[in-house]
Amino acid sequence: ADLRNISPDLNDTERSSVRALALAPELWAKYGNGVCLIAGSFELVEPGTGRVLRYPETEENTAESLLVIGARQQLTYEGKGRIFEREFEATGFHVGSGYVLTNHHIAIEPWAADRRTQFYMDSTGAKPRLKHLLAFFPGQRRPIPLKIKSSSKTDDIAVCALQSKTVLSGIPSLPLEKESAALEIGKPVVT
Image (cartoon, rainbow, N blue to C red; front, top):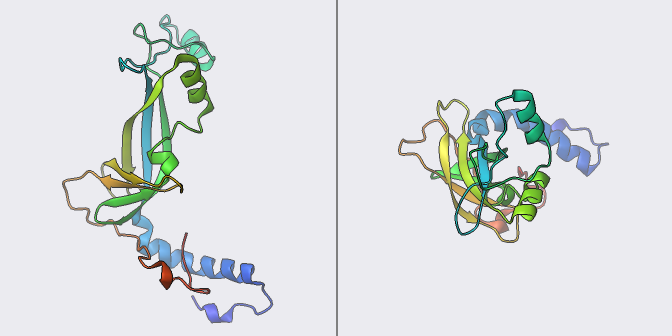
């Protein structure tokens, strides 16, 4: 894209938007396969015993089961009812050497913004336990399990490692600027 012909009567914000739109197809073509869908799930467990929190047992009647699940009914650690498990999705970015960058609130505590989960944690004393964390990359046949490596305590960012024994061929690495001093006013960046 020829960025030299951007109209001079645009303000700085409008010019930045035009530049970003012009660069987007090129960036997507080069790095799009390095962006993954992160899918995970968590359950709630009883502290000390590790017993999972369950919905109350119901008859096999589907309509009754849906009513119980939809209601804010007290869950239990007893019985054989369906386990309370919440699923979540987010995005991640392969940044090289099998590492994926994502958000702290996704990798570390995906339950924090879930009001239903917070209600059950408060009413039962249950603690959350991450059950699955998987990365799905475009063009890859199978998901790749993720392991949390590090997370910022002040910023919403986390690093996970891809748990794959196979070479991650075809998954490009999104380049990260290693020198913060290299960033200058006017230098294009993607966030």
